[in-house]
Length: 279
Ligand SMILES: Nc1nc(=O)c2c([nH]1)NC[C@@H]1CN(c3ccc(C(=O)N[C@@H](CCC(=O)O)C(=O)O)cc3)C=[N+]21
Image 1 (cartoon, rainbow, N blue to C red):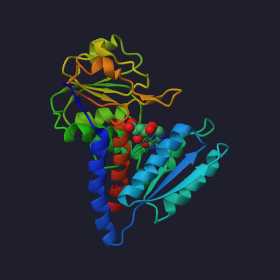
Image 2 (cartoon, rainbow, N blue to C red):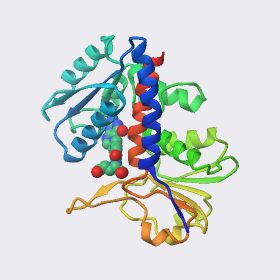
Image 3 (spheres, rainbow, N blue to C red):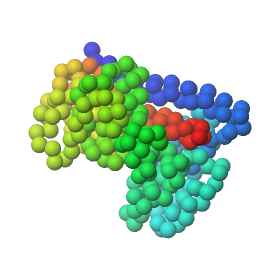
């Protein structure tokens, strides 16, 4: 029987640990404030932003939010971020992605002060990660590492295959697995014979953005499968990039969607917020 990796439970554990840390900081009169900026009103984004604010409340982090209209100009957004960068009472700044088409995401990300970049998206933090230096790490990949560690799944020396090469998940994920001494392969849309490669994986991490794409034929018997995908259909039902039912009897462990990697992203965001206040 496969272990169903309970991201909701682990994220709860992490949030409890953070709650104690925040309480200790509060005793020293240090408060933590996260600022979340959303431009436009994409419904999925609104759900995530709500979840982030709820997590802040749970562990004692103050959250403030800006809900800006879709028409907000790039310049206006940059001005707001620069103002928030200067404010000593704000520790973390998160600009919810995706942004409207007229705003360049790379420009916005590099405007956020690297010390307040709780998403870990700033080029300086990405660079530090690839150099093995301390910095803020992208929340979703960091959450995946926590899941593996807290389930005592060995990483060192294992074959890890990552499907997807995004700046937010695939690339930082590969750096983190490399740091844990896995042998890492990154696959993407131009990879030939994908199933042949994914079948080598002891640990298969899927972040390709295609609903239920990974079926049993892509997975080695006994592998650990981590599903980073999240898709919502017309009936608001959620699924991942992995065809869970087709794969579950073959694997030794697997993350469900929902209740797997998603809640971990939020827990690690909270972790990063606490990090910014410790410096
Ligand atoms: N600047 C920025 N930082 C992000 O971290 C960021 C972003 N933009 N844009 C969108 C993605 C997506 N993301 C998720 C967060 C939580 C869940 C989550 O809590 N998922 C629950 C289900 C929640 C639901 O009901 O949809 C679960 O999988 O169990 C999912 C996805 C953060 N993102």
